[in-house]
Each structure stands twice: as C-alpha cells, then as structure tokens.
Image (cartoon, rainbow over all chains, first blue to last red; front, side):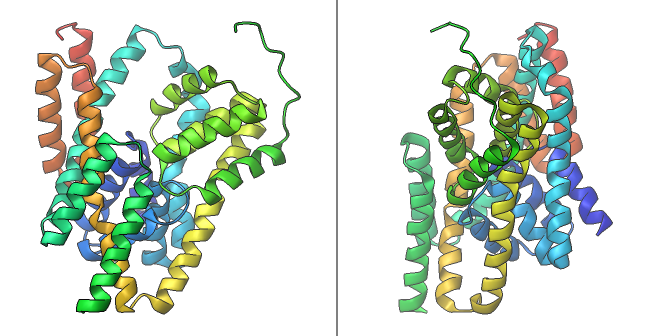
Length: 171
Length: 186
C-alpha cells in the first residue's frame, strides 16, 4: 500500500501533457512492475474512458481499487494529485509571470512531454495491430481526433458498440 | 474592452463546489473536452472573462497533473481565493471517484458477460489512435529548430526505453533541454 502511494506520488510529479501521457506513465509503472497484466490494464483504461471526469484520475482510482480495494482507490487518487495540488498552490503564481526563463522552461517541458507521449504511443501501438478491425478503428480514431473537432467520446462509444456486436454475433 | 470590470460578488465555497461538481459529473472525455466546457460556463456566470481564463489555462499547463483539475483549481482560486481552490479541487475530484467505484462494482457483477467484454475491447481499441493523434498535434503545433528536433527524438527514445525509470529520465531530459535553450543554441 505504501509502495502504491509512492508510485502514484512519483507519477503525479511528472504528470505533464494531460490525461493520456499520465495514463502512459501509469501503465509503465504498473505493468512494468507486474502489478497487473497488460490485458487487465487495457480493460481498466477502457473503463476510465467512459466514466465522467479526467481520464488520468479515473485510471489512477481504478488501479488503486483493483489492487487494494476502496482504501487503495482513495490512496492512489490522492497520491497522484498531491504534487499537482501542492505545486499549483505554491508556485502557480510564480510560473504565471511569463518571463524569458518561463518560456525556456515551457520549451524544455515540451521536449520532455513529447518523449512521454511517444512512450505512451509505443506502449499502446501493439493493441492497434492485433486484428484488422482494430487497425481500422485505430486509424479512424486517429483521423477524427487529429483532423476534426468531433468529441472523441463518440468514437469510443461507437467502437465499443462494434466490439460488443462482434462478440455477440461471432463469439 | 479593457475597463477594470468590478468584481461581481464573490461566489462562496458551495456555489463553486457545486459548479465544478456539476461539470465533472456530466462531462466525459478528459481534459481537452472539459476545459472548453469549464471556460464557457465560467464566462456565462460572469465569474471569469475568456482572455483571463486562457491565461490561467497556460499557467495550469506549466504544473504537472490532469489538465482539467489544474485549470479548475486555478480558476477557483482566481474567483474566490483559497476556498475557491479547495472547492474546485473537491468538485472535480468527487464525481469521477464515486462513478468509478460504482462502475467497478457493477463490472464485478456483469464484467464476464461476452457483450460487456466486447464493449470494453472496442472502447480500448481507439486508444492507440487517440494517443497517436495527440502526439501528432503536439509535433505539428511546436515551433521547431534543428536542436529541438534532435533533443526531442533523443527524449522519445530515452523515455521509451527507460521503463520504470521513465520519470527520472523525463526530468533529466527537461534539465538538458532547459540548459540547451538557455545557451541560445536553438
């Protein structure tokens, strides 16, 4: 339990770049430590996506719940937001004064954040090529969210329905 | 446009809490969906004009953490000080926490049904596409210089290979690129 808290504290500190980057870091930490299998984690991400609220928080809560029940859910959620909340309180105003050094830091963070998202893409890419249907779904999701302003939720739900129908009709 | 708008009566803890609670409870799809919803709702209430909101949003991005949560906390503090900050924190956090626990309990009961399994598999199948699109957009929107390109490729390779050392590697990369940017080499 203590290790769970420490891992999520660490994740929170580097949680730059928004939800999916954070999900990628959580995956690396949790699957990398063999606390959960890649398939289990994939199910969990699917659930986190279709629940209201920030996807990264949902994923953190679910991992905690799966590993240590209700208390684990509370611990992982609070641990993952601890650093962001503390930093927002303490130095939020400091960053706001966008000086030249602020701009440099922003660029440096971008370099790191693109690295993190690359790791996330790399981690999830194998799932896209496991079947022809998944290839098609992944390409559609990419096109819609890169080139249109359609809410990705519709793709997620649509793809979920396709998945359910496939399973229902073809087993 | 630039008249110093007299601050409307500062909303209290509970009105801010219920404001963010409502948004968090009904908005599905993470930060990039929630942030515009928060912006429009704040403007509609007269709590925060649009340009100020986007200043806060830029600041929120310089702090780690879920984008929607950070943005809400900064907006809450701007509107009502520390109580507003806490109200936003709790308002964003509680609904998904409750929803997740309900869903997890529900899936404990029906999670083995093939149709439910199929739905979750399908919902997960979009993730590679969504994350790739996110990377694509970040790469497209950045102002590139040769050194930045080299550093970013190195950063991607190093962090991907780092496994559970990804977080320390991330900070090493940020430190190195901050140094490189300071040198004005790029």
